[in-house]
Image: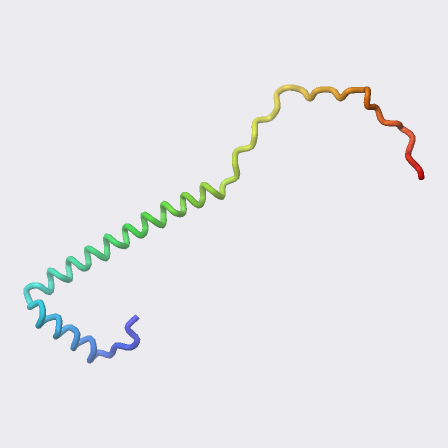
Length: 88
């Protein structure tokens, strides 16, 4: 993440922050930033968990229909097939 920053760059950045906000405010700012990052991560986990459960619900196959408890209706005998094979 910080491949382009050397130690000199980081120290210069910290000195500028110290001059802008003062020594008393830097710990407060750091604490608030840490809490914000923690809350953001927690929110992201919640959103990801909710997304995963909604996707899992879509992937689950629908429940199988209940088995028929009535016996199958007999086929009509008026459409009986001719037992002789058809040869052309």
